[in-house]
Amino acid sequence: MTNSTVPSHGHTTICAPATPQAAGALAVIRMSGPAALEVAGKVFRSNACPDLTQSPGYRTWFGTVYKPDGEFLDQVLLSVFRAPHSYTGEDSVEFSCHGSPYIRETLLRVLVENGAVLAGPGEFTQRAFMNGKMDLTQAEAVADLIASENRTTHKLAVNQMRGAFSRQLSALREQLLEAASLMELELDFAEEDVEFADRDTLRNLLDRLLEHIDELCESFRMGNALKKGIPVAIAGVVNAGKSTLLNALLGEEKALVTPVPGTTRDTIEDIVVLDGIPFRFMDTAGLRTIGEVDMQSQEYIEKLGVERTLETIRMAPVLLLVLDASRPETYPESLHLLKDYEKEHIIFIINKIDMLCNKDVALYNFKKALNNTFVTNELNSLINKHSTILVSARDKTGIDSIKEELVHQIRPVLNEHAVMLTNVRHYQELHAAGQALRRVRIGLDTSLSHDLMTPDLRLALHHIGSIAGAISTEDILGEIFSRFCIGK
Ligand SMILES: Nc1nc2c(ncn2[C@@H]2O[C@H](COP(=O)(O)OP(=O)(O)OP(=O)(O)O)[C@@H](O)[C@H]2O)c(=O)[nH]1
Ligand SMILES: [Mg+2]
Image 1 (cartoon, rainbow, N blue to C red):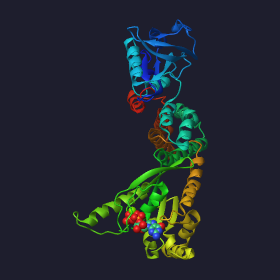
Image 2: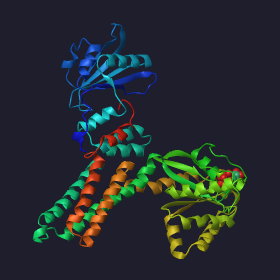
Image 3: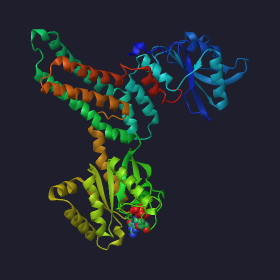
């Protein structure tokens, strides 16, 4: 279904508070729709503007709001926006009133009594989308912008809102259309056995498209992680000082620390923003091998903790592997973890360094354990790629180095992509488009006739079109806009 078949919402005039439902210095109430100026004019009096319906756009008027019984309610500023030069593309007004819950509620009630209806979540933005003020990715970015809590998520939302992703989608769509027209041209003349489209040209075009789509999909791994903070798993053998390290990184005593091995059973986490990047540090249960155990036993609980740890390590893009410098005999067990989990970002933390007189011994033991665990090639890549930091979590030494290293490793990943996918819907559509295109690509290599490949090409176009909302259903729009706050 295309935009035009989705029922227009423009026939009603909607109103809603745009500021939080709490007392404050000021509150903003916005109203949008064909009767916005007429309804506002019924409750607002201003000597400077006796007839609001005649007001030009981009004007702010000072005046008074009266209740239907003629009683004074508040002195307000009223901003006027005329269609199409408003957020929604419709005639709109914004009341800046005093931030009393009573004034806000009463003003809203008066507007409703005069013909406006209360807006649903995201309805202003949905109207902006319907009226062609923005595409769906930009509308979704508005919600992300409102939710952004740090420099990185703010920047991602702003980029998307300004159309960086939309432009990439347009480029993809154009290339897809080019491929489709090349194929359909051949299809038209199929009976005459003429091959118009040069299959090499088509092949190159598809390769470029796939490369672009894959790069965008790849960016989702970090983009998605960024929204809730990039997960950083703190893992290692029991009693290595993982919880102490978490507390030192957070600057608060969040996790329980005791000398008893196996203290942490559940994953404990919190977010720290480092140089504008949110990291979600996750303390885990210490690793230890536990065989078959009785479900009623204490060990069974520990076993569940270890299983949860392994899952946390699996999903986190960054791993802080904590080694206990006072127990070098546990290094092989910790390092063994790296055989099962291939990670781009690992930082080796040699903890409890305060217990050793000679720090070089810690490094020597570590290198020896690495040597014994890995064959040369693996070892070289491990040592070259990942850094080792000597730490005393107890004395809080080396903590800043860990933070610096995290930013140093992650910043380039964030800068690597011109556009970073953060929205699961966009990822799913792009992934599906990529799969369809890959089938076309295989078809080209196996000399499949074009008429068998065009449905997949059309399918890819459909998925790309869905992202920006050129093709959308009411269900999808409902799902997207219901997540917005009221008044946006
Ligand atoms: N000397 C010294 N002791 C430390 C250091 N870090 C942690 N410890 C001690 O080591 C013991 C275990 O610390 P935890 O932080 O609970 O260790 P953990 O790895 O979370 O342990 P589990 O949750 O049981 O796996 C506690 O007695 C800590 O005080 C350190 O840097 N130096
Ligand atoms: Mg612990």
